[in-house]
Each structure stands twice: as structure tokens, then as C-alpha cells.
Image 1 (spheres, rainbow, N blue to C red):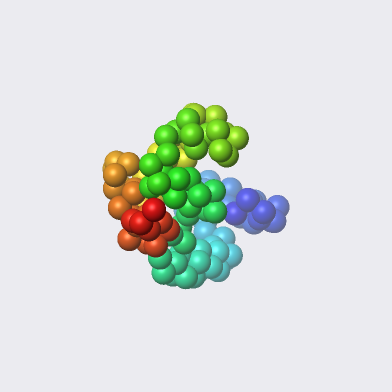
Image 2 (image 1 turned 120 degrees about the vertical axis):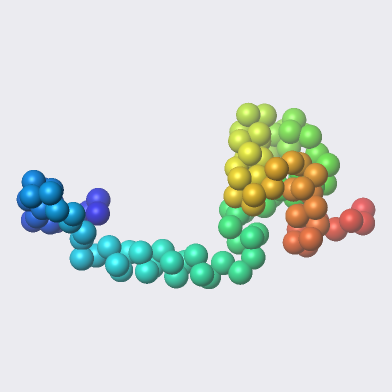
Length: 112
């Protein structure tokens, strides 16, 4: 662990010198907290930050990268990075899929 005590680091080095594996006693607690956070997610939308949801909504509304960048005061590259990360996080591989997801999730409606 990054914030481990010096004595813990010494014990880990000693274990490594003897060909052993050292696991901090705090690891099970950290892992269980991480798993708890993951289990709280009930909707894929909860995996997204507020900015990602905002950009997803704009993409689903048919706005171009340039339009989104202008409205949010972001560079085109930043908008493209957000779109790429959205696709990775949601396991969606095209813009049309992102739009379908946004509609199904209730982020946007089909009516204008």
C-alpha cells in the first residue's frame, strides 16, 4: 500500500529476499471497500461522470465534436477523448450505439 508504515515496507523487503510474497494486512479491507463501491452501481449511467453524461447527451442530440467543444469551451481533442472513454466504459463501439444507449437510459428523448 502506498501509505504503508516503514515497518511494513521493511517486512515486505525481507519477505521478497526470502522469495516470499508479502501482502499487507490492510489489503483485504481495501479490496472489500472497492468491491462494495462496484456493487452499488445499478445503472451503466452511474459509471459516468457528470461531464461524460453531458457529452453523451450532446452526442445523442446529434451535435458535432466542434459544436460540443464550442458549447463546453473544450478543444475538439478533449471532446474526442471523452467520446473514446465513453465508448470504452460502456463497451459501445460507435456513435450510433452511444445515441441508442442515451435514449434507452432516458438521458435524451426521441422527441424534439
